[in-house]
Image 1 (cartoon, rainbow, N blue to C red):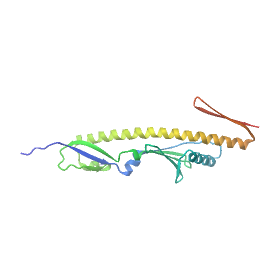
Image 2: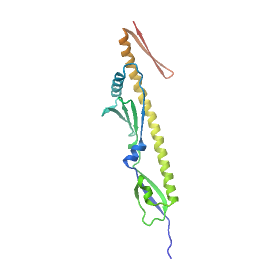
Image 3: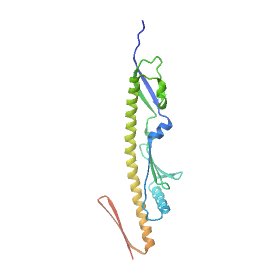
Image 4: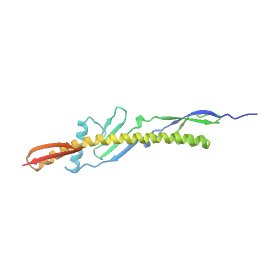
Length: 192
């Protein structure tokens, strides 16, 4: 008489490039005040990004954080993108208890249903995948907030330069002063 045994199986689930792209990137659009014509504001933005150390690549400025996260700003499209795909593990190891005769050790994320897992095995895998997706989502949101802070720093410089240019076009600038209180930047320009 034969007896079936349940054994722990380590299953490695590969994340494909499309899985990483779908789950590891976030894009948002942002607006720039119309102090000067839109094209000039975009030029000032691109120049300010370069001055702050952002690397120009294919009409997009990129900054790579020490943790490997890539932050990209497209001055022409006014778009901020955060890419954490380099920080995401390319595979997930899942331990399930199974009676599989020939345990499959590796599978792509999109091909899990082809394994024919029992419902309890499938639930174990889905729980672990859900935890991984939640972790990726939390990291992505955290990095997007950092990206927006960096963008805001650059936009302050953009507005400072745009206001100075606008003031020069209105007349003779006699003084320019800045004050920062309560987290707000105030720029006062006197024109004679």
